[in-house]
Length: 131
Image (cartoon, rainbow, N blue to C red):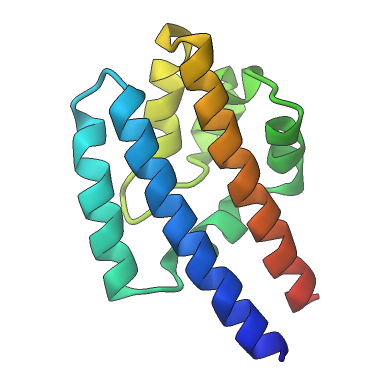
């Protein structure tokens, strides 16, 4: 049952991450974001473990706590940018999002927080199955 549950959650994580990237591409100013959905979809098709592996590697408990607290400094922190958290096959989505953060409306920030919260919940659940 655990393997089936893990596979189901991994598929959900991939789908949710892709939808997150699509949502961000609609609210971000940079034209770079328009390419991300296609690149992420292609990367997932090539390796369906990629999103989980990268988020698991980079999304530390400290970062998850900051996301859950909706700490805007999460996007402004130099340490976060230096870590290149969430870098997926050369896509430094989070670093680019960091550059957009201060120019986003409160509504758009709320959308991003909602997606990040969903992703962290799925990631925590997957981690608990691995423990």
